[in-house]
View 1: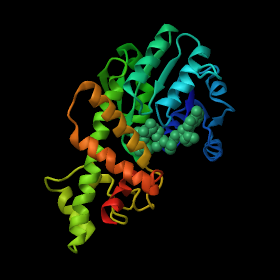
View 2: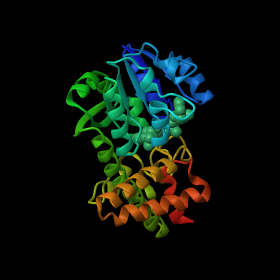
View 3: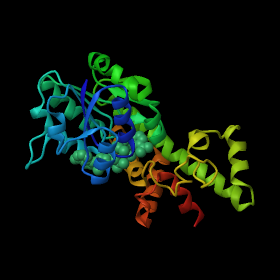
View 4: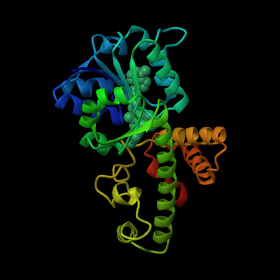
Length: 296
Ligand code: NAD
């Protein structure tokens, strides 16, 4: 298949490379020159714009930071027409960024009006899951569009969930990430308490991982440097899931909770703590660096 992949960052990189390895013709675009060069060296044809990457593509995949980026690219701005206007009827567009469910529904509607299949398909599994092709996809859109996308999604992930109609994938994703944001703070708190009492972080992590406090952070994303070889913490909190991206997701959850009149007290507190951490200059670091806020 001819696939355009827009957004070759921490997550998009592994996803696009897995599509390439599966034998697809992947044409990529990213604003970052470093990302362009790296992926050109890996065999991805780098286009000069998103529009050029999408020319002649049967499928367009987007993996961008936030709602504004997806909206500007697909629906356009005052200065630039959106990509949806250029794509022929029958194109499949898969957005795997984490964005507002409302934005996903708006884009989905605009796509449907032009005969384009659109899926919101945000992911979970981190950069390791993106590289290994083991992501979990939470999908919103029609069952027909999902069946069209299935072979490609199965190349990039191992769990596909149809959450419901357009926007439902994004709603599932912010529920999950609100829980993850809270769990990372709770895990950091417990580890800091143990370390303040002289416990070895590795020993305590293993005890809690195998006890009732066990969770994903302890399994694969330990916030203490050196406990796990492959963790973002051990890499100096680089190359994982940025604090500012977690802050964005908790903001989406909070906005949604206000509209739904849902009580999310820990989600609201977690958002404030990540905001304080970001204001302290850590917005670009991996979100597990929140442990430093609790220790300093
Ligand atoms: P990232 O910042 O590493 O990558 C985003 C890329 O998009 C950057 O390389 C940037 O240059 C590029 N970009 C921005 N605007 C662009 C445009 N108009 N055209 C082309 N390229 C553009 O972010 P990431 O960690 O890869 O996350 C991407 C999305 O996936 C976010 O919505 C995030 O919330 C979500 N997500 C991230 C993780 C993770 O562990 N990093 C996990 C699950 C979901």
